[in-house]
Structures are given as structure tokens and as C-alpha cells.
Image (cartoon, rainbow, N blue to C red; front, side):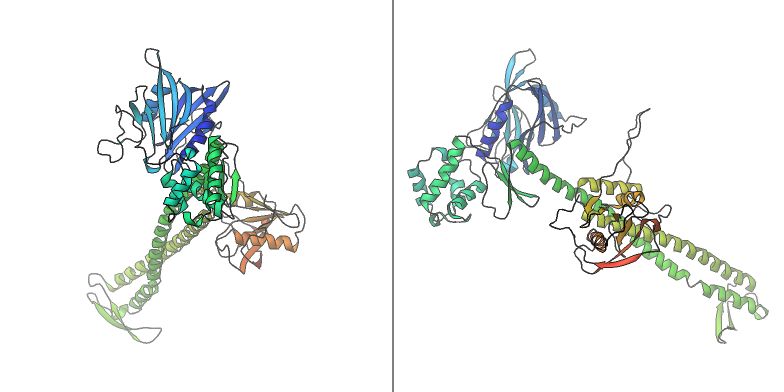
Length: 581
């Protein structure tokens, strides 16, 4: 990432506009992230400082933030020393990726004292350190004792900056000195040359200078035209000296790739988005990245739960199928009982075996008898075992049908998770699993006299066909139920045949859809299913009035008898078109 020394200069220059603000409250949302609630001249904002290696962040936002109910000990320490104080300055420590926030706070006796917060944006060595006016460490998000091979950070110890690197200040380099450095490093890639020779440059910015000079990012120093290279280098350093920064980020589709304090042209074929401020740049960039990470993590947790239950149900179904197969042999028990009753005249008490003639086939059959009871009682025992297995078979068929519905439901959830694009989709899927008993219901904190909060569903996907008809597509099973349940009887319902997918409703408003309306709606049903990307997919469709929702059935389950089928490709019919609502 390009959170280098000069990016810190740009951020400090922007945040300095909030000097003089009062610190009203401090919150900690994560081990490496603190929120400072600021107030100045009738305006309130939140200063966010995050030193997580994957999320370096120093930004101002006026949006509300999540406030944990129970503050951590570190949060309480920062509150004790900084709350009700004033932010007096924001600066970048020279040649370092460190932001220093100066505060003026009253001590226990009411005397004003200076306190400092150092936000060290240094990858895995990042830290947020509270320092006293005397330069002693008060607290830190990450401490390191005397055994640390890098630097000791412990309460009570003097705060020391990282050991200075043996590099040059790029802003002070003359053209002659720059050319001399180039001559010494001709066999080195320019990216490594600039990062190793000069302070505060990230590989991203170094590659950008090489790209501006030659159209390549991996060029060696000797391959670059020195005049052009000096010109591009001086343009960047002059902009830094004059504090002419341009917040921008590079996106590959909706995936954030990189950000910097100058326009990045090296990422050809990708979108460069300029922002109004570095705060909005960092907040939007990391919010999107964090949402993607959270989405994957949340989806992984749900998938693990669903797969665990699915494997359990499949094992249970296999066992029940085997039991049912054993029960199908019960006719042999009934027939044995019949043969005993038919031959009672020749069977004597105490016999363990008897040879009789099968009245159906005419063949001899050997009967096994219990010597402790009479032949008639032996027959009754066989009849009882037959009746028991008959009842067991009926119960097993019911249980197998129930387990098959559970498996089908869980498989439909797997499909919905694979197509979920927002956290709200996964929240609804989690709610569905809780309703079905696969997850524990979260406790409801409903105070006496208060109303229970009503849970609402997110909106379904909306499309408009080429001929102007609205189409709604459910995102998950709960939404499928709500969508189908609220549809008019004349609306047309679509669903992929024999596979899991979304319910699709073509809203007719009393009109007759065109052939193209039917085709596009059917393609949407195939696209929003587990057969996405396939060709020649069969889709069922019928009027909503023909659908039935069996009592007690799983979310998203309906039955229908009157229907038609269409064969379409499982792709988005409105791809690259402005048809989505």
C-alpha cells in the first residue's frame, strides 16, 4: 500500500484543519483502532485512528460510529489522559510513516499539560502510542518488552523514534546529485533504487515515476532516459513541497487495488477514482475492502454451519434408507407365521426345526422354532415382528421424506450463500437458519412495555424487461417467500427446474407479457440459480395462482401442478444494459 511518508504528510496537512477541537469522548472498536469524538465551532466529527497492518487509517468522518457498550482498559486509559482536552496540532514525523497528534489536557490539579499520540503506520510494526509531556510512554495498542529485537515499547519507558535509515531527503536532491545516484545504480530496477536511496517513498509511487518516464514499471535505471526521469521525479517532489496532493484510488471493477496522493496511471485498463479528501479516500477504500473481507468471513461461518448440518442429515438419511431396506424383508416373517399356522397339526412342542411345504411354490421350507414356547406362540411372535417392522417402515418413510426436505433446504441455502453479494443477504440467511432450528436464535432484549422490533427484509433484485415489464428476483429463501406471497394471482412465477435458485416474479399488472418478456424473465431465473453460466437450462413458469405453500414447509418451498417449461441460457439478459432497478 502507498501509505508512505509523504502520504502521511498529506494526511497530516488535511487533519490539521481540526486543531483546536475538544475531545468529547474516546471509543475503541478494535484492538488497533480508536475513535476520538471531536467538537469545534458547533460541528462534531470523529477522528478515526487505525494502525492495523491491513487497514492503516487516519481520517475524519461526520458519520455516526459504532460505540461498544464496555470500554477496554486501553480505551479507559486514553479517556483518562485525553478526554476533555484539545487537539492542538497534527504533524508528520520527518522521513517516517508516523503521525503525531498533540493534545493539551488538564491534569489532576487543573494544570494544562501536553500529551501526544503517535500513530505509527509501519505494517506489522504499526502501533498507537500515548506519550506524556516528558516523553514517557503511558500506553500503547501493542507493547514490546526488553526481549524485542526491534524496539522496546512499555509503559514508563522513554518514547524513541525508530532507528533512522541511511537514506537521502528526496525534496533536497539537486539534479546533479540525482544523476550521480543513477550512475551508481544502473543495474537496479528504478522502483528499488528510489525506495532504497530516498526517504518516504513507497514502491507504488516509485513505479509511477518510472511509468511516467518510460511507460514501464519494471525498467532498470540504465533503461530509462535520465532527462525524462529527472523531469518526472522533480514534478512529483515539487508537488509534495507545495503540498499539492490529489487523493485517488485505483479499482479493478469494484475491487480496490491501490491508493496514493497523486494520480496513478500505471494501472492500465483500471478505473482511477479521485476523491475530495484523504479522509473520504481512506474510509471508502477500506470500507469496501473490509466489507469484502467481512462478507467472505461471514459467508465462511455460515457455510461451515450449513455443511455440518448437511453432512449430519445425509448420514442420517443413509442409515434410515438401510433400515427401510431391512424392513422390506418383513413379508418373509409374515409368510413364516402363515406356514406355522398352516402346519400346526404336524408341529409338536419342543421342536427347534421343521420341514414344511411352501403352499405357493411347492418347495420344502425349513422353519426355525423357539423350543421354549408352543408352535402357535412361535407363529404369533413372527406376526408381531412383522407388524413392528411394518409400523417402522411407515415411520421411516415419513422421516426420510422429512430429512430429504431438510437436505433440499440446506442445499438451497448453500446456493443462496454462494450468490450473496451483501452482508444483509447473509444476515437474512442466518435468520432463516435460526428459524429452521439449525442455529440458535439470538436473545431478544425486550424491555417491559416496549414493542418488539420488527425485522424487515432487504429489497429483491429489480429489473425491467425490454418491453417494459417489471421483474423481481428473490435474494434468498425468506425473500422468495415474501416475494411470491405478495405477488398478484395474474403475475407469472419462474424457477429453474429440478435445481436450486431464486423465485422470479414477472409483474404483469393485468397485461399479457410478450414472448420476449417470458424469455428474459426465464433467463433471470436460470441466471440466479446454481446453474449460472450454463446453456440450455430448463425453467418452469406458471401463474402465481397455481402455487401452493404447504403448511410447515421450509422457506422458499412451493408446489405446483399446472405449468409450462422453457429452455434458455443461464446468463443475465441485461448484461451491459441499463435494465436493473
